[in-house]
Image (cartoon, rainbow, N blue to C red):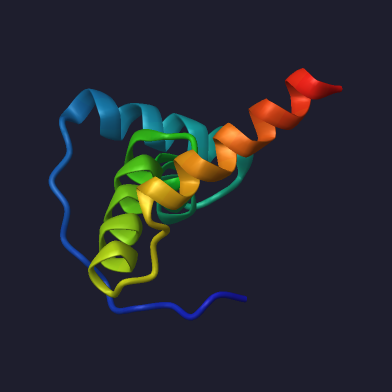
Length: 87
């Protein structure tokens, strides 16, 4: 089980809270469970939050010198293309 943090306070529009409560009730889950699932979905790699996190990780890696030199990447791609044309 994941480590749990302390509680947070969150204000939601009433219509969203109503939908969360309907989902929780019909699935016999808590509102917290529904909200955590929604946040996990938002933070998934192919969703908006996940894309933002990927960009931030990439920036951190580049700042730490962990990236690849663009000239080296282009040279490697040119070599792959050249070999493909020769085949």
